[in-house]
Image 1 (cartoon, helix red, strand yellow):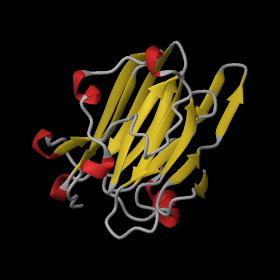
Image 2 (cartoon, rainbow, N blue to C red):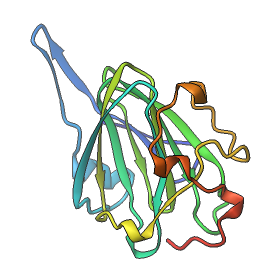
Image 3 (cartoon, rainbow, N blue to C red):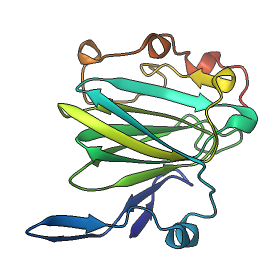
Length: 183
């Protein structure tokens, strides 16, 4: 596996090696020992999956306090633009984001540590999105940051009119209106 820390400390792009022939390919997508050597110790407790059509935007979601989550995300079908927004108190990159295309063909994965809001938009016809989390879902601690907050300057690569959003994602709050975050 190839590990590359991105512009925001703690966010890693991981590229598993693929072994292919006329039958297809084989790839190790998770190897605890290698992960810990590069990223650090994380105890994943749950795997999740979503399936979405073109233009579906999910995010920017986070859980606060003791329910905060680190995530390891990947696409097993299609292509998405994946965004991690740094919200860690005291972080020199607080309020900045990284955006990475994740594709089935490339096999890329993104590790997002605790203290980040996360979201993605589907760029292909459909996308199957899989992720590991290190804490269970706790709806009472969840928050949604507005995907279109102009202060964040996120280019989602598709026009807002093409986006399909849940009611929760339509009601996201602007970062400047968030009083406090605990992680």
